[in-house]
Image 1 (cartoon, rainbow, N blue to C red):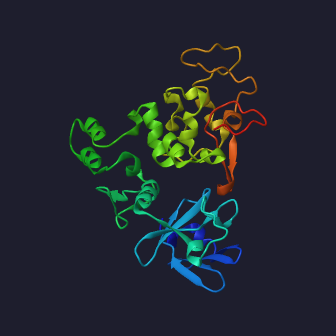
Image 2: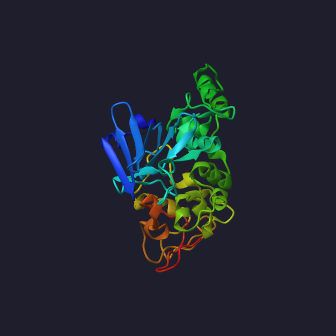
Image 3: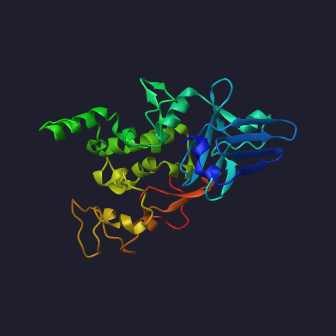
Length: 308
């Protein structure tokens, strides 16, 4: 969303963060969020352009300078802290200048990737178009251009159902592997995580990556895709019990029941509900100042090292 309308920034007239001699500040008025950094001798300020993230965990910011390029603010807002702190993986305790302390230049390829996941129709013909993009993730972000679909549904055609389905992309028809990679395009595929060099608990942010490292994933199972548990058209369910019926689509529900081809998973000997509390434990990610559900489905053993 445009930073000027970000509710998080409007919740406080001024947000501050200090490290050593450097002080970071975001001051928000009616029409602008001004980001500044000073070391006591020099001060640099720019209006923030874009805010990324609804604030369920955090919100980060991009702005432009006189050269027209994009720059990432060195600080983000974290819900758990109710305050600013270093943007994840951007901490810099001893910057060489106020400029280095303030921002990181962002190349156009990375800009396109950021907006591709946090907005809709941000690129056309392979070219980024800041003026035409739609803030937020709307229908066409996953289903592609929908004008032909709408036109065919409005038309007086006896075959409109068949035509409308052909006129728009439906991820529902993807194979399990492709379906998880489709969601992983924004949430982190196996290879995205590997090639980025991300290690340890930080990999938990990439749910698709963690999911396919589960022992039960095998070569892919339709009951273990992202949309098998999460309806992309609804708000995220955070109650563990709401996922129990999905767990039982693979596992038998009682020890006396025999496994089968349809239900190859044995019953849990410890409980009959809230399965994810034990088998998809939440992991604290320090740079995010928050817990993330580990989608590597497993029997979690006390004291074990975090499984890569």
